[in-house]
Length: 336
Image (tube, rainbow, N blue to C red; front, side, top):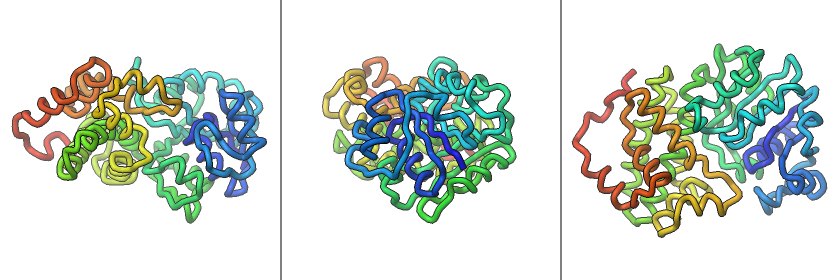
């Protein structure tokens, strides 16, 4: 199969490497000429995945060269650029190509999920040709060929099963789901909660506090997902609790590192600008909080992360607001 991976960051490179190991014909699009040159000539993404050897890949800064005639197109740009990147892909996309959205986030201006952005940009793309891929998957480990489980979701599961057939392997197990909303909400909100978990660790609040924060974060993502039409059980799966626990506790988590940096006194805006790799929780916090407000969903952790990241609220003030909230029923809003 000819596979196009659109996005030369760590996650896009990791997915391209995995597909190449399955003997697909893989082409990677990167906006940075250095990434395209290094991946092709040095078999390493020195900017986003330094030190990780890659299988032989063709990489280019020309979208048309990468996407034209591809049977499987995986979109992996940062969430803020997905709309513009999908628009660039549109004229080159084969009429029968299967499109997989592997970007995790919520569009900040429109509060749209990633597949909604793609549907608006590529209106001729039917449900049988659009899927989303998510789950607990640090890019460095996937690129290194370490065992990983993910989930592909689509309406009716036709596209999800096609992704499963194309990308499943013993070291990269792909499960299928028909809950596109739940899989996307889980993949987006877990990044926000991971910022809070990193701050919790940075303040040395202890393992009890991190466990409580992560669990209540799961409740928040579940409430938002159910309000948008997701199946509650999805949040007990790979795209929910699996990705949440990985991102909140894993040393490779960019979002957790952002939270730790804030706890150590760094300015969040300056930290994000200084790092080439994107911490999606930064932008997603604003979009998720706006979406929760629109839908009347209680998301106190997301609210505080949003105010700390975007409105300068002191971290200890945010913590105080969380721990002094009135007592609640544990499963309020997520029973389905």
